[in-house]
Image (cartoon, rainbow, N blue to C red; front, side):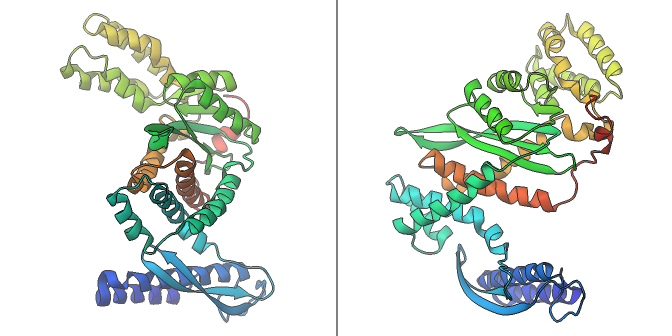
Length: 395
């Protein structure tokens, strides 16, 4: 809830700050943005703009309380809006600084535990903007861990489509630096919204780790699953069959395109094979797709026998999508949504270089995922689920 006049004033002040002071004005602009966001939250909480008379008003403003917030731009002097006797506290501060705080803790741990370099020390100074001691790290870590643990262990509910994947981060483990697997899951609810469902740090993508991950989703209440979307990693494939043996599986078509080209007998045929796969997967019906697959196998059995054999053994894995509403095909034929999630995690963790332990890595990843989940929850509908829900349990 924000008036047009407030928007105009805010934009004008930001422009003036940038023109007048450039980068030096960013601190003041951040203070302005935080303070404005908190005022908007209070108006939404009360159901009325400042000084507005309305029957929907749920309470009354009660001034402001000063608060200093440490950020990479330095200390921000904020005015936290108060509400008379209703326990209001704006979430803008938490949402705006959650992953930044987690990143500070991760880097500070590296510095304090003796695994830092001159580069990490420089990053710490630039990122944090002030000195972090061991006591502050311990306090911040405990606070974040409690919050992140609640997020990772919250109840789930009905999920129609489940997408699974993993990415890797460098973590110090038993005296060595290794690439640890970050196992990830997001789902689409019956309301058509995406939701981050799980994240864990494991030594690898072996079946035992994926199986524990999927069983944890089950124990938190995940049910009603219609489809799983993922790549063909052997550990994930075995775990999926063990935990969800009756749930249909859509193998990511993008990965199938890539796998198919690896079976080309010569480099010049890769584009041709990719086009053949695209024609199969973009067919209007599953009957046509299967017929085109059969024709392709016959066409390549002599000039590209390895590809023909691979297509016969693996092609059907990419056609499960045809069993679902056509309106959903574009979003459930690949795990590209998860790839974008992985890129965002990598972008946000790149500055940390390496993590001192798996708890530190999981802490930062969770902070990033919570922000993404907040955006999804408040954003527009991802899919119109009516065509699927009208079918009930019929696939």
